[in-house]
Structures are given as structure tokens and as C-alpha cells.
Image (cartoon, rainbow, N blue to C red; front, side, top):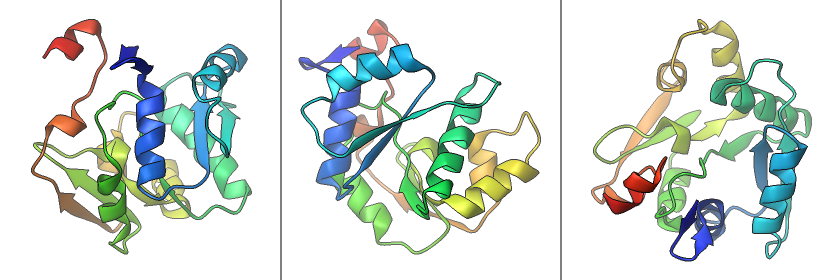
Length: 167
């Protein structure tokens, strides 16, 4: 979806860069999605696409698959960021890095588990222990975590449809 003249993922990618993230790992479900997003992010360097290798097609399965690839590459800590928060700003990611816990979760009006800074080994172990229906929030809260509060909730606004852009 286009927001303020650019695809939402480009906004999030710039916020990650502004927040100090150097290499961006983008989880994609298939080669078609990868080609589409490569075009959207072609102006950025150090962007790697990780194809979902899980048979199950869900956000949680895709995340698990991407985390396993990152773990295999020796990456120990990673900032999660879904592409549907186009007003996110880099200072959020900088503040999360100030904490030293396996999971650092932001909260505005509510918890934002998919914007957590995580230790990959701890979260993958928690995902392996979790029940199939457990939410990511519940999984992330099953390992030592801390919450960082933010007062400005607009930048955490999630966009899933055209109507969400108007709200």
C-alpha cells in the first residue's frame, strides 16, 4: 500500500535505518513477493530477502522460518518490524536497544510484540515450546522481557486496509 507517496515497507525500512539497523532482513513468502519488494527497496543497500521455507503459511510460521535462517547465519539479536506501521520512527528502535533483555517490547496504548527487539535463540526456543494457538505476544512474554513505554501512539498505528489510512 502507498502511504505519503511510498510503499509502507520503504517507510519502515527507513525508520529501521534511522534507528541504527545496518542490514535489513526482509521475510517474504515466495519469489513473486521478493521481486515486488526488491523493486520497492532497490534504493537501499544491505537488504537481504529470506524466503519462507515453512510448509505452514502464517505470519508466525514465516517469522519462525526467518529467525531460523538468521540463527544459521550467526545473528543473535534482531529487531522485528512489520511492514504495516508506516509512521514508525527510528528513535523507537534506538530506545529499545538501551535495554538488555532477551525480549524488549514497546507499548503505546497496547503492547506491540511484532516490534520487539529479540534474542533469536530465546525466542525460537519459546516458539518451539509454545502451543500452536499461542499468540506471538504470549510467546514473547514467556521469556525474560521488559516493556518500554511510548506516549505517542500515532506512529504505532497499524495499516491493513485503505480505511486504516483515513483513521
